[in-house]
Length: 209
Image 1 (tube, rainbow, N blue to C red):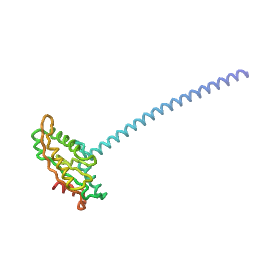
Image 2 (cartoon, rainbow, N blue to C red; image 1 turned 180 degrees about the horizontal axis):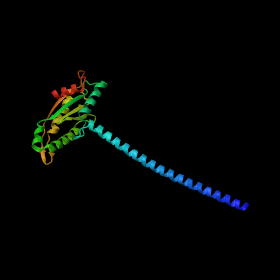
Image 3 (cartoon, helix red, strand yellow; image 1 turned 90 degrees about the horizontal axis):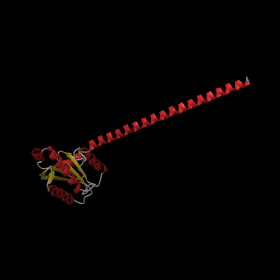
Image 4 (cartoon, one colour; image 1 turned 90 degrees about the vertical axis):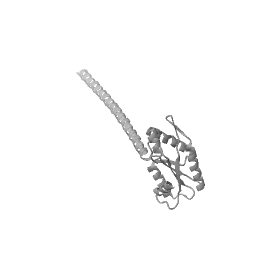
């Protein structure tokens, strides 16, 4: 009787132990599954976050940069000019803006097509970037119109020198889709001065010039 009871107790203990082991295994398996699902969820959230960041950066880029040339656009230029005015930089004989447009650009579009006209603007942009300093700002403000902020010049003569260099360099023909294209430009120069309270005032004076 005592031996039978001991056997029953041992069997019950083994069964309980096995049940406990099975429960622990089940618990461990469920924890592993949960961890894997959590990892997948975290990866998905990171992917979503990354895609949102990329989308936001692309949106911000599209707001402040020209889609064709990837130059700063008019909004970017206005913001840059506003900042310079707000900072109260030493503008006298220091900062100048050039307003540039192409002569008879519409004729090029009409005669050779808009694809050639667009490619010409891209090539022209690259040539401009090789002329000015890295710290200068070139912006496409619409159509065939560009603006350039020249930084830290010593005199109006130096700004005029830049303008003449641009005219000379851009006078060399461009090879666009098998066409040799010649362009001529108009350039107006305006210095920053105390009369300029808004960015539009500076652009207006350079455009008039």
